[in-house]
Image (tube, rainbow, N blue to C red):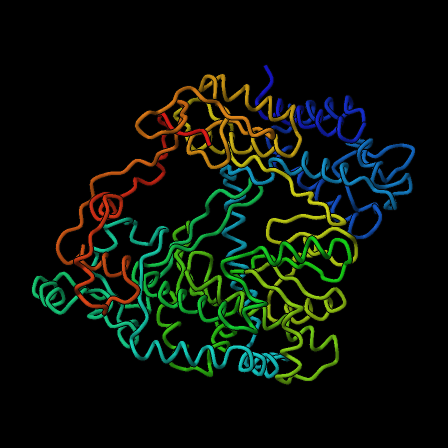
Length: 616
């Protein structure tokens, strides 16, 4: 019996063959044979490599002998790979040159087939995890060779920072010194391995935080709470200079895991207060706010799609972006607001505890997992992009020139969009600071662009639909079931009807018949391009049509907050400022809001429950 993955990739080949009017018989044979010999890695590693070579060929305008090395070539061409040759030939001619009438359907088809399992969340082998540890260490070693004080572009970097962020950081520094920042607990894991309401009960603080985030005003809701905890000796201090993030590897792809550095509770708690203010003050700025985005990536996506037509802008991607921002470079970003700089670095963790048990000092500012990692790296990359554009245009660093440059730069984390004619300068400046540009995912010359989840060719969206989890085996695999059904519906909307039908039949073999529902229905089911929905009854009480189906639920457990801990959570989650009038405590809370004080979500506890609800 064929595996589910092989059935789906075969159905996907059928859909692409129909869309491109190409025979896929030989391709199905190749996929079947190689999947049997190589296993799942053929879909998760080998085929994504094929897609990267294909994208590189689109960028270069031709196929070179360096591409598609894992696949045999056609005898008549020696450049066109035998696998998917019929579809690839709709894009490149026999000499490997990009055709002027390249088929967009074929480009989309190649990428869909090869990237469908690119983001499958699977545990990597022990060898690949060991390689990830070595890469983490190597990254730190590489950063030691970079000296921010003697950096060639240090003075220009400093000038641009002052022009773009000087006033914004001054406002933020004033709020910090007035004590107007409100901390909060983040949704993620912390080093102490506690979660939900336990975070409000834990009374541990760091001596490094006391100057800018004193425990009496940040950890306690009022003076009586502080005196009570002190009397009971519930408050304890750790030596912040010896704190270490807990580095873990979570599933990303089979090729390599994602590196996450889990912060201590108190550092994460205070980082969140700075994150909120930095994001608000920058996105509200009429100048910088048009170029740096923290909460909305749509601008990058629009630019990528438009530039796939006019090639005006290039899209850049960085490798190990979070792990390669030097702490000294991050400090230079804030050094003209010294109190703010010290506050930010007081909640930065200085060491990392690796999975192999070793502990190393951190040269980087922070890894993914720190609340400040994303905004700080974005501001550093933005400043380098501005500097690169100015250098490419032979403009001096003046406020007027910087302002003229800002509308032509868009930064969302490590996804960068800059004018195409400035790319070489931007790359040189970025790499001079110990960072690495991923040239295989950087697009400048051709008509293909990729940024923030939008892949486009000549204005057409060629973004693949990803299958992110292994197929569920029973209804107990709730997360996998929800993910697979979502992928099936997206494939259906994209026109991959054979694949969608195959996925739906496999899912219904587990769940039984599923209803047709609208996009906004809380029920799980199939979507329809015609907008049809399944209706089984009329609810006389709620005056609505309903159907019976599965609904995703999250399990909760009793986790009641009492006394001052409950009041602290109220202040931090219900009002903007913990110092607001106490009378605000008297406002009524609806049951769902009360639930957050009495119950906590059980981690990884999604389950499916059949119930009546509206299908629209």
